[in-house]
Image 1 (cartoon, one colour):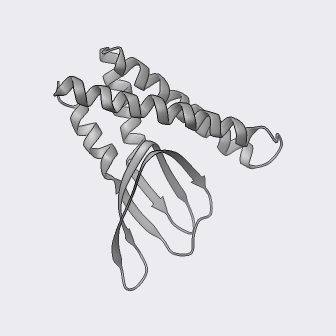
Image 2 (cartoon, rainbow, N blue to C red):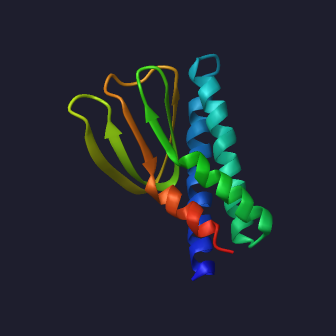
Length: 144
């Protein structure tokens, strides 16, 4: 069971990291825009996730460590008018709370995707949450 979970996590990391890198390279091409800085940060993050997935698929101890860090990077979901951050590679199951009266809980999910959001400004309606898929993957990686 452990090998199956590790392979599934590695496949999601490799696929999400690769497609994320392609998307960030596409965003990077019009040089000079302020979006280029965010694209470079995203490219570095996706490259790290891709390498972590490859090392995990090779069944190395460093792959488990890097993949644990990659899952922790995907854990938070923060969308406030001041700061926004979200990252997912391969898929997500986000559980979030809106911080507007009346406060409400929500669930959002998608598989076979990648996404990166880093912004100084954000939406008018604040949301804070966690990626349950990343949390469960991180816990599975703790099984040794």
